[in-house]
Length: 193
Image 1 (cartoon, helix red, strand yellow):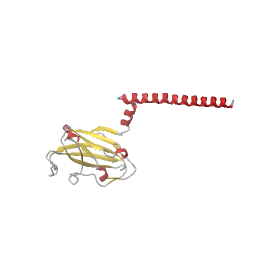
Image 2 (spheres, helix red, strand yellow):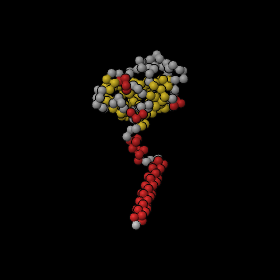
Image 3 (cartoon, helix red, strand yellow):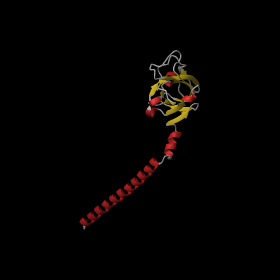
Image 4 (cartoon, one colour):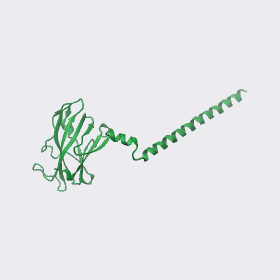
């Protein structure tokens, strides 16, 4: 009788485990099907939410974007820009390049003091989708320098030597990965002053 009871308990245990596994598989299949439906939809709520949260925004000239990175939290507004072959007596190192000089206003909306030199670490994308940093004209422009106290604004310029194109892009947070959100401003060449 003991053997019969032991065999019955073993069969019941096996059936219970098999039943639980079947239920988990059904739940996993439903989850995977829902995930696939969300991935295939172009306007899923997750996509809209990530854009609204500012993980990677694309803005236009005059629009303000909020940057949150290791430097602090601040608002950036490109107000105007120039595309020129010569700036303050300087020409690009390569004849195929042109200067992009962007006027920006930065406001410290965080609680810590910001360093103007840290705020200059920005990239621009020109023709052929090539990325350039802003270091060639640093002594010729109205550079961002000094300390920016919480609640205060700083006005300055960012300058780049890059391949000419119809639409330039000014990008904050391009190479900072998870330590910063990324904001891109599109700057059509026909809007240059």
